[in-house]
Image (cartoon, rainbow, N blue to C red; front, side, top):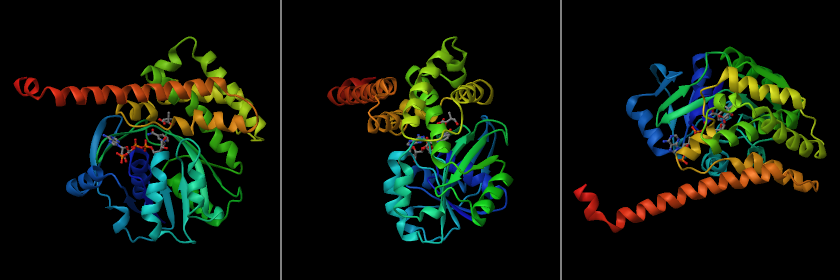
Length: 333
Ligand SMILES: NC(=O)C1=CN([C@@H]2O[C@H](COP(=O)(O)OP(=O)(O)OC[C@H]3O[C@@H](n4cnc5c(N)ncnc54)[C@H](OP(=O)(O)O)[C@@H]3O)[C@@H](O)[C@H]2O)C=CC1
Ligand SMILES: CC(C)(CO)C(=O)C(=O)O
């Protein structure tokens, strides 16, 4: 099949490279100039697995404005807040025959994709796999080959022939896809997972293993899971997992699968970029409010993450102002 990855970040590279190595035709579209230029200069992307065995994988990379491809399937992996701009800049390549697959974290992306693609062509899912972008053109796939899993569902909840073909390619690429017919329940399972692990690890600057190793971790997780499930049940969402299964998933993925991983939200925070918290904990808060339920802990955590983002920005501005006001001292140093 012919796939084009929209958003060549950590996860876009992981899906694109592994689909390419499984025998598909793959191209990448990205807006981040240092990334596109680095790939062109070095002739591909540097890929490591668990910080080892770095190899150069040749890839075809384009800016949106210059791209003229017509893939069978778009694989979309931007950050939530980047998506609208990516779609606007690439819209000249979209048509009604194309399918779109996304496993981004959080909620908000599907509505934006539906402005460009037909509902029956949209597959949305979740990826329980950890990946780190070390820098432009340099990515680290965390975890053994084939150890991660993913869930996906058609937006219409009606799988067709192309859906099964896409799932077969994901299987060949060892993503271990599980096709469900419960669209909202599938996506919300990961939102709840991320609302616990990404948010708490980011606030405390700890790995998933360090979080899960804290003796009170289950209590913290349980409070957030319960509140999230109270929201989802009010919204009539049939959850994929029970509350206990969700807690087990938090523990398994954190203790066994990725104990050394800092979740993607931490990676954004530590590089002073905005996080996706409004699309994760913030989404649960907004959904709860629609049903007159206040998800207080999620609201509090959303504020804490924004407080941390704000503080980091203030510190950056103060450091920049200091440098500007004392150029002589800097030159002497
Ligand atoms: N990473 C993971 O393990 C997982 C991520 N996801 C989800 O997948 C989606 C895509 O996320 P992900 O692939 O992690 O995205 P990345 O973290 O790889 O994001 C890449 C973007 O971050 C910006 N950026 C700026 N400077 C740097 C730098 N030095 N290093 C890295 N990035 C830089 C660039 O955007 P800009 O133009 O703004 O500078 C770039 O396009 C998200 O919804 C995420 O939540 C889901 C499962 C796992
Ligand atoms: C924690 C993890 C890796 C779970 O798959 C994730 O979703 C992230 O880092 O954002």
